[in-house]
Structures are given as structure tokens and as C-alpha cells.
Length: 143
Image 1 (tube, rainbow, N blue to C red):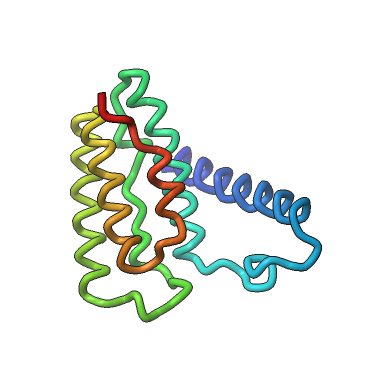
Image 2 (spheres, helix red, strand yellow):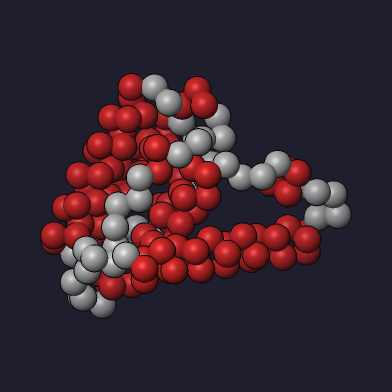
């Protein structure tokens, strides 16, 4: 559990630092994310993205995903940026994502990886569409 928490902390710090430097370089007035602190759910979503990216590398290399290292992050229990998302369909999306995540850990293949991303996009289509393009860039292309 310690390696997972250390990795999660490192990812959060790296994401936060890299975004701040990018924002400073591209704009002279403060971006919305600099003015308002990100809520816990948003921070965990960023960590999930980073974890998904790392998982993609393992799947692409044909390596099995270690369920003791890649754990489901209970993002649905954290404070969201917009509390109106906490409705029944949001929790249903969470369960669908959790099943797809568990299937990926068992199969460790491109199809199950893309299926997990499909669940991410499905929820984001209903609640927070901003990250959809970024999520879709993680997909393996159909051959």
C-alpha cells in the first residue's frame, strides 16, 4: 500500500507543478484553475489519468497489470467541483467503470483497456466533458 500512496502523491505533485508552469508560460492573467483550488475529486481524476497512461504502457508492452500496484481509486467518495453531479446516474457510471477496471486487471489487453476508457468517456459525456479528448488520446487504435 505504501508504494501506491507514494506513487499517487508523486503523480499529484508532478501534475500540479507541470500545469502551473504551462499556465504561466501561456497567459499573463491567472487561469481559473490558479484562482480556484482544484477539489479532491478533480485531483484524483488527474491521478487516474496518469495511472491509466502508465497502464497503457504496460498493456502495450504485453505485460500483466499488477493489481497490488494498480488499485481502483474511490473518486466517487471525494468532494467534486460541482456537487450537482452526485446523482444516481453518476454512481451507476462509477460502478460500470469499476467493473471495466477490474476486467482490465484480469485481462491486461488492449480491448479491455479501451473498454475501461469507454466507461470514462461515458461518464464524462454526462457530467464533465472537458477531458474527453485527452482520455480518447490514450486509446489503442483498432487494427
